[in-house]
Length: 265
Image (cartoon, rainbow, N blue to C red; front, side, top):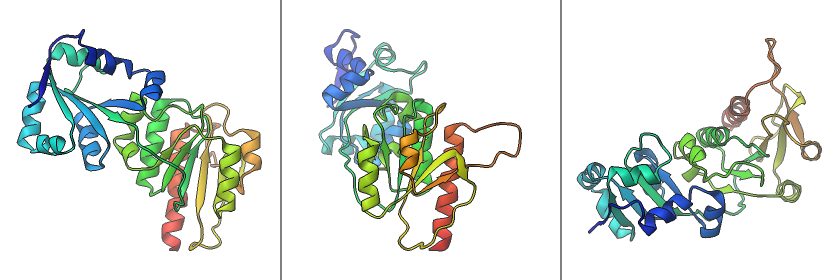
């Protein structure tokens, strides 16, 4: 049977609110997300949910869909909360009525067909959008540097639309070390920079394992990172604009590489 929470001073409510801060998420190795779309994605992809906080109206929908039995079989604790408590724990002005606490996913570097690296991309909306784009374009995994926005940030989770649950994502990586390891493992390192080339040809589609690096919103890639790339790409600007937002530019580059790979194979 679900438990009930009606007080905003409840200890569980306080612990959930604390997870809005990165330091607490790191300490507890946990995170929160909200919304029915992310909730369904998390269930479908076996994200380790520990607690669900839900309003009575959404609980009824959950029971009608049979999702409550799925939660019970996974040992998830369900807490029915009133609107005041939901507003307290939510980061949204108009909460959908469901919020989950989860353990962080365990991800390590793997021998995947491809990677996308985010070097110091700081805007959570950009990070979430690029995770979603990399997922849609068929890339295998994502690596982020320490100065990149936390993937468990609420804005990252929401803008990824669930893609954060689909891909292995390794955070807080030192690029100097990981790029050397990736090169030794047969990956081709491709950076994006204004001084790069507009064209890139793939020599052998069967053995091609791309790693695409996308740099900081205002500064781009660091010089020492550029020096470690096998290729540098740039997007042509046909109008007076000097550059594109990193999520737009990244989407174009990722899909261009994906299109070439899929066509070649």
